[in-house]
Length: 159
Image 1 (cartoon, one colour):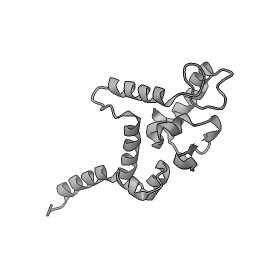
Image 2: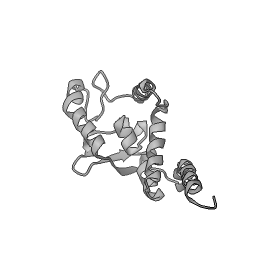
Image 3: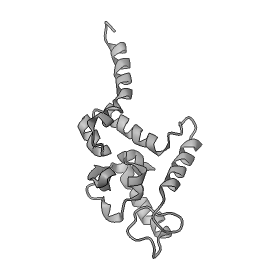
Image 4: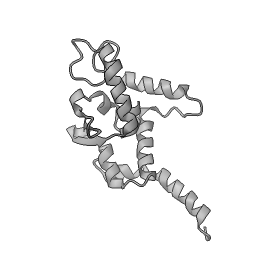
């Protein structure tokens, strides 16, 4: 779940990750996106810590001779299914008081919005999200415009 929010990748991209897609020294993952387009996506220290813990503890406990190179494994040791990830995300979010159950795509949307609100260039966000069209990425700017409006109205004498 941390990696979904930290990177903004799609659930299908997450479950498709293999161990060799991780470059922990650079904190990047190689993601195979829609249309078989490959991109490199950075992740931060918190996601790195979570990945290290998973690789040291959970993955070895789940792995078996059918695991292959899959990064994330399900209960039977095979590559985890998208439906399982979606259910896990919904379960965790619904258990958190005051947290809306956004689902996995909501985590992607939040990641994009937080990048934009944090000052990230929209073209960089487009690349991170794997959008073919900048117009798709611009859909995430509406929340930022609401925030800009609030700042404007609070700070500008003629608002």
